[in-house]
Amino acid sequence: MQTLEQLMGNHHQTGSVQWLAVRPARREPMAVVDAVEALADRGLTGDRYGSKGGKRQVTLIQWEHLPVVASLLGLGALDPARLRRNIAISGINLTALKDRQFRLGSAVLAYTGLAHPCSRMEEVLGAGGYNALRGHGGITARVLHSGVIRMGDTLTPL
Image (cartoon, rainbow, N blue to C red; front, top):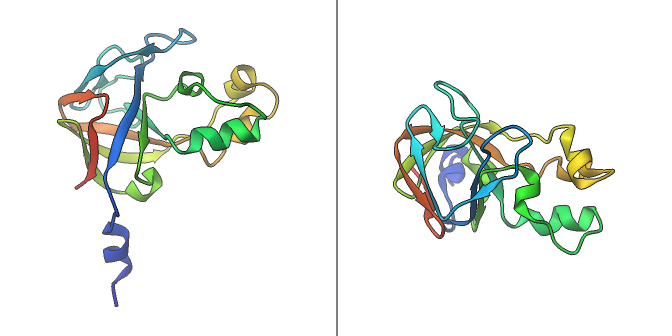
């Protein structure tokens, strides 16, 4: 019989970057990119949340949750840019990375918490946007080791 720690360390597969963007400034449109540099203890180059020592240097959202949120809002599809997260990852449960480090492209990040929705989601997504995103907002992370993250790169728990 496996311990809880062993169970929490088992991942069926790795994740994959499906979408990548930075937030240049508050309320400015997301800048979708093919690659971005992650700087240790700073965040993503060109992202407004990049700050020394910050816990929200990078935000990641579950690619598989986009259709769920769209459905809860009565939408056919949902552009990830509307949710203001940096990276959409498919193939791995992001919340299972709690208290873990992971390699993303050539960078190493550490889980720092959940990315809860803010009141702006009502403005961006319409009435009910905040509640539609609850439990589907993704995670926050900080950059431990610098590297480049590209579309299609793998996320591997360490």
